[in-house]
Amino acid sequence: MILYKYMSEAAAKSILKNRSIGFSKPDTFNDPYELKAAYPPQGDNPLDLYFDGVRSWGKQYIWSNTSGVLCLTRNPLNALMWAHYGDEHQGVVLGIDAEQAGFFDVQRCLVPAQFGNVIYTHTRPTNALTSFKGANPILVGHTHHYPAGHEEKLQRIFLQKPACWAYEEEVRVVKCLSDRKDETNQSGTFIEIELPNKTLYCYRLPDGAIKEVYWGMRHPALQSISAAKDGLHEYCELCPELSVNGCQLSRATWDIDSFDVSALVAERGS
Image 1: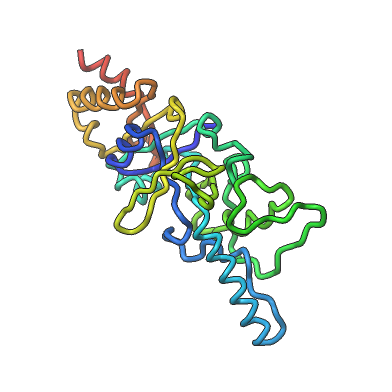
Image 2 (image 1 turned 60 degrees about the horizontal axis):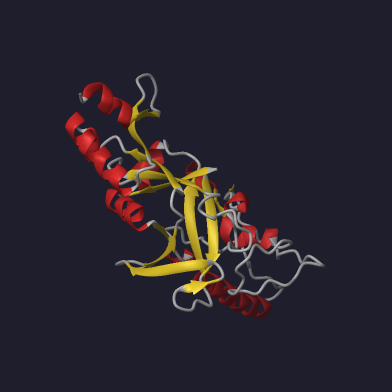
């Protein structure tokens, strides 16, 4: 399964050069409703609601500070995603083989990609989580594997979002960041990079896991054949196995089409 990540040109080059991609803690996301579906306070009187609200906040805080989330999507040609996350069509989309990257690994992912489809709803759950008899207890903040039997809890914590975000077609991978020694735990190795607004936990990708790149319609490499040739050379030096594609507006619709940059350079650059 190829899943896609929208980003700036600088971020794409850094990922290709270092063969790593950043996981982020949920409390740094732009949606204030992250994790809010998991533990809605329960109680029949104000005092019960207050104390249950404190417990709910504590669990959300632990999950938010011990979990790294990688947000991916199924579609590299989404105009809204390009505008919002692809540097206003000047950036890049990377296509990652999720299985080859290890994102299907149920022993090293709290939520692996095959179970990471985001659920979009118009209403927020207000009922308590269902207790499943027979399932092994889940250790809040220290679970590195996919805990079968706790699907509802994982969905409510990490995968439920307001319906207004449905255009993203998001798929998430969640890894536990706790219990690291020398940057490594059961979930993998994470190199911390401090950004102005958050910390990135950069996870090492196996060689060959990044399969595709798409340049946005306003990407500098698409402004001329000579620029495309130079850009193609630069990206293939960073990652020789890449399939490099350019984006363009469809002639008859408002959709985005893609084309093979190598074929274009071969046709017009000789």
